[in-house]
Image (cartoon, rainbow, N blue to C red; front, side, top):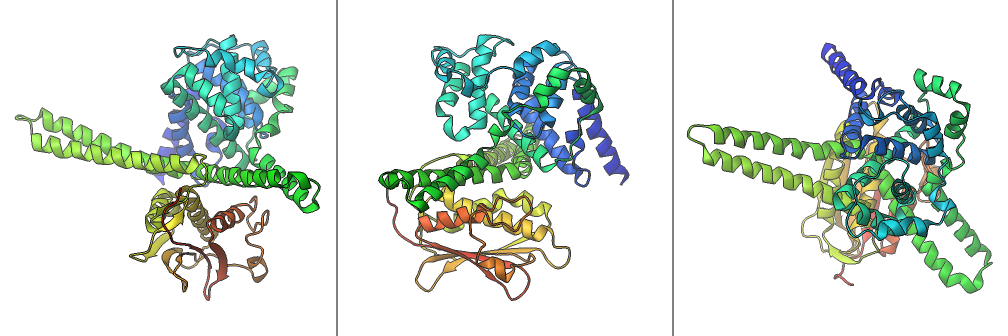
Length: 498
């Protein structure tokens, strides 16, 4: 207990040293302080230590936080910007005036202006530029393009291409990392609605009436709810189809319906990866730390008299192995979150399952769950899209973990198995030891918008069934004799097609 208190104190001191205080967001998980520590690690990696000018980062963070309905982030970061704490954790950063903050918050959004005129200067650059100064035309263009990429990532191909052209590959990736951090903290504030403002920003709001109004009443706050807007669009399309109001446009409507379903599937994948951000960070950190240990060992072998070349060779081999492991994890993450058209390839289902089990290992361990596999050998290849089928497996595993996380008595075992059904199709089974299914919920479990989880949107299993059926398979749930529930799906076998 004494060591835990000491670690907590050191963590709070580290946060305070950077920001000049301890923001409430790093104290919002009192029952799981290790999560706040992980959030701090992500903040340092993607926000504080990114080689982007501190003032540019802070101005962009304030501007992007306009598009979050929870107002904690925009108020806190605006406080940093005008001197209540240190912007981007930098004690030497220039403090902006209240008038400058108000001007920033009144900047028209990209959707209120000629976006083509904003993007052309970025697209016309023949060589990458450095980060622009505050309140310049170039900063305005970058902010506008970054905003579209942040709010509408599925519809921002041109904006991201313009940013990459203007900044160059390395700066572009740093900027995308910063946007990823902002998505993470916005999600964090939504699952901690009790987050309160610190005393210093309460004072700022009390003393600055116009600034307070802009911070707390921005009409653009709901624009970031991309998933909700896509669901609304899907409902509209379904309604129009049922009422046959657009008979001549039926084919176009069906095509758009499929596009929206695929966009929702992508949103579901990205949202799930966001929920797993802390676990993924842990998985990536482990091989990186191992690589550092091996590298230090190699240096010690080189310093020996005489140098131990065999020791150096073995240590460098460990570095290569660890870095390859980290690269494999990152490649799997990239594959899952990218948006791509449906593919039909021949793939090995056991290999796809093992990759997802590895990706969710930290989340499973954190919840005290034991994963057992019964993967049949010699299964035929299935015909399908690897990313989408892995999304189905990922959703089923996360649902099982969430179901068992509330179980206080008995074992927490997750069984994942494969085999063949009577017709020769590949069969995948995910069985948990959670509270099980109510008889009345089994038939509705895969309906869109039906959920048994507080705060759930009811789209995960509906999307899973759509994906499986698009692969000419079948997905169903059943109650087990003991505790828990079983979800199974089948897939056809066949050769790869293009």
